[in-house]
Length: 286
Length: 210
Image (tube, rainbow over all chains, first blue to last red; front, side, top):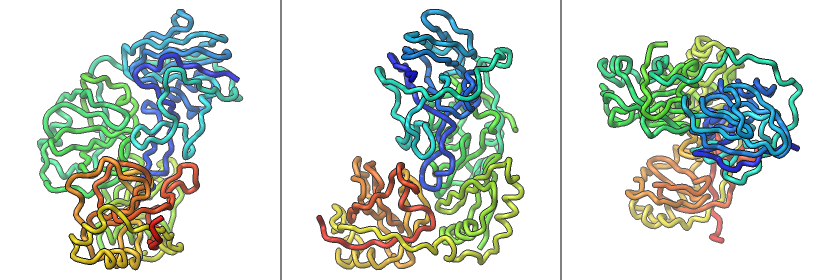
């Protein structure tokens, strides 16, 4: 049995898979890895099914020791990945030996690494998923120094020969996200709806798995009054009383009482997971 | 009865109704006429989110399905057919006397109305397994506490606005506490994990403080 002994979790290390859709009616969001394509890529690199549980490492500063040998891959954020001091090329699978030490440095591009191990992390599922929901407090606890993570049985698929060419690091400059109309776009003035697309926004320091706040012009409402709480989908851009938008993400509350002006299209949602505080964002029509 | 279909991305529709009553009726009607590819119905105070798998059912087909539900359909019928769940309550909540005084009734009368009413889970929110309960038999509007508690114990039976509720686990909360139950409202190890799902009928039963 191979295990990963975490010596240093970094800012926040969470076990995540593709989440637990279908429980919103009971008050539980789907959760799951914020950058789902990075999760799928990391898993494919080591021959796992796309949804095997991996570690989502915020910012980096992570160090762990392999108890037993095994394959691993790090995707998502772009930064220094070293195995026993030796540099591992980004987005590639590498084999750790018994006792090998994996170090994931501070992210230089993007902000969330996905670390997959061949076999996946074998922690007990909750409601069919091994994802940590940081708002509902469901799923495996955040990883602490000294934690030992069991690694599951080898999957049937072999470690594929790939394919570094397909991988692009998260952009360092302005990111443009595609938007679809939100259910409450008509609650906003024409000027506000225009400003959403004209302005250059910045990601605030208040950005986590629940939502990412944007800094920019205040989006004024045409319709005042309170909105009875209603269910939201991932990527919903809700606008609070002061006019500041927030992109709601995987661990958002299942219902919200602020009007949703627009929704980040599925193809742009993974990019939100990699936005760093202060980074510039623009929106375009999907 | 009118309903509006609002956009909610590539894999959901948001249906807006005029009242919670219509939400309950439409939720029942939709639940009684399921379609492949409809992943989930998420009711709220005035809306129902219809979450779909676009690989199985196109959004437009889901919209047609919703539009074709007759206006009068489901008025208090389908989803509520299951037997009501009975929740035993020791009516000794910290706010019981003050709440009764606020409503100008005796504590006995307040408890009697709470027990006599047939409740229904309108929607779930705030926390996993926290059902917002409504009842035609419940005449009271209960203001929230001006200062919410930082710790409400699990099983606290509470009132706010026109709603009843039970806290599934310890959390902050601004509802007025009238009792407590030993019933397990939320257990992710159980199937289903929540005692109260939308549409479920609920009765409260007074038991001795113990």
